Length: 114
Image (cartoon, rainbow, N blue to C red; front, side, top):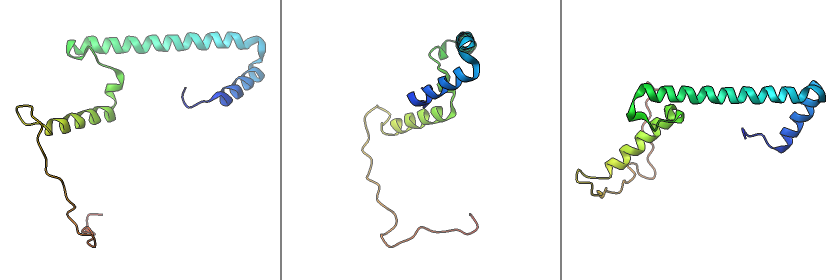
């Protein structure tokens, strides 16, 4: 849960009891619960509105799909999988890549490029 363990939760609870007092703590917990439910409903509504606006092609859209890192990773993996197939869908044997530099060679260094 967000990288918070049992000892951290215990410390937060103790601080909350000291700061708010045992009398007001249940009311603040209820308010926090209401706020979390309302935020969750808002996020689900926004996600549904986005799906409705984009159309049936994006019916399985998740908000995590909008993360650029996820989208790029997915498209790169799809492209790599497609490269391993010929137009008929048969896997293609690729030659094994060998190192272009010898064991004692250093890669070229361009002072103007850095």
